[in-house]
Length: 330
Ligand SMILES: Nc1ncnc2c1ncn2[C@@H]1O[C@H](COP(=O)(O)OP(=O)(O)OP(=O)(O)O)[C@@H](O)[C@H]1O
Ligand code: SF4
Ligand SMILES: [Mg+2]
Image (cartoon, rainbow, N blue to C red):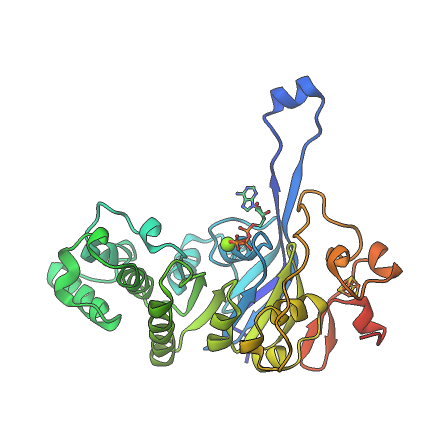
């Protein structure tokens, strides 16, 4: 069966030049930042695909392109066989938009503070014309609030009257309102207390089972993706360096960068390896290293790594971009 979500060669370049006048006066060239390049993966129905990587690796940029919040500079996102970029007909685009929802990291920032919880959850129902009349609307909103573990009577409260975890529940209820198939969750628990994180993740899993949802889950926290994801993509400076089934990735990480990330959290890799610090800094994305962008930090780098960019190649169930692995040096 065709995957619900197909991300094909997705790229995004940001123009971060100064205004043209100051550039013209100083003779400064235009500056471009490649936030994502040639990112490809597919997500099967009811699967959770986890995307991990350090800050600035391009995870949110991919997330925003996956839901159509920003257009790609290259490549495309296909949902249920329909390309988001090609969906010129507004009826097709509306149908797609309903199928895809997003949950953000900071529920306080993503919820309008002047709206009551009931209005926040009702908004997509109204926008997509999914209810007829106020009684039905109120009923649906109450059902949705209860579905995420809140009280139907909470509908009259404002976001500041809820705890952080409860606010994220409201954001999830809003995302569920138009009965989507695909939900992109960008660091959904990173702003929450540790004790609350597991509750929200469990809720997301329950909802996934109940409604057959497909998730793209973004987190810098490997414990979160381990708990949730069926497959995982590891990003480094805008590129995927490894894509593998979650279990295999934690048991036997292949790419040196994945190994470094897992080495920093031994209790979740459970490999018995000693905890090691993640070494080195992420290079400047405006002027990334030539060849393999990871080479300045990689303990296995050799001459080829400094000049030739590795391609993502299949290794068993995984895909990995690494010359050392390709040449059997690892
Ligand atoms: N609108 C924008 N304009 C210019 N540069 C941007 C924009 N959005 C993102 N970037 C840059 O693109 C790169 C990737 O950013 P992105 O937010 O996708 O990373 P991330 O992996 O989500 O990081 P984090 O873990 O910190 O959320 C960064 O270098 C960032 O500064
Ligand atoms: S290609 Fe070279 S530098 Fe890059 S991860 Fe592999 S060994 Fe390290
Ligand atoms: Mg981000």
